[in-house]
Amino acid sequence: MFNCSQVTRTYSGRQGCMCGCKGKYTEADARGFKAMRDKILRMAVRTDVDVDYTPGLGLFVEVESETGLDTGRTYALYVD
Ligand SMILES: [Zn+2]
Image 1 (cartoon, protein in one colour):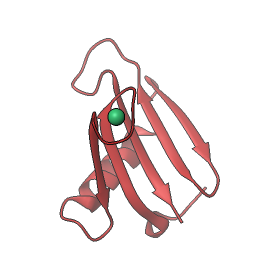
Image 2 (spheres, helix red, strand yellow):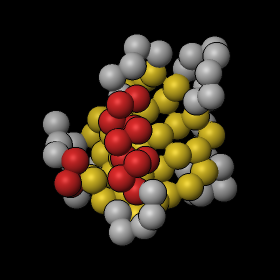
Image 3 (cartoon, protein in one colour):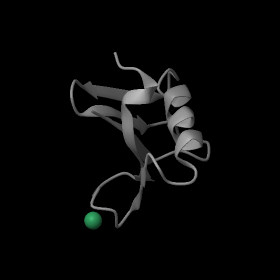
Image 4 (tube, protein in one colour):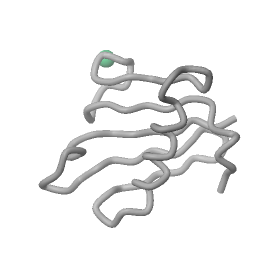
């Protein structure tokens, strides 16, 4: 799909608008980037999430489970 070195930005936020009002973008040179990137990579293989991958754009993960800390959140990895 893509190599993790191609990830340039991550996103974590509540589902809905992704302008930044409901969450946070983290650039590759920012603190916490690798931890968030790896968290999203681990989440993408869970069964309670909806994963959407668009080549050249990135990977989007929507958490749909009824319980848990990540419920109702969207995570994204943007790739080069
Ligand atoms: Zn917004």
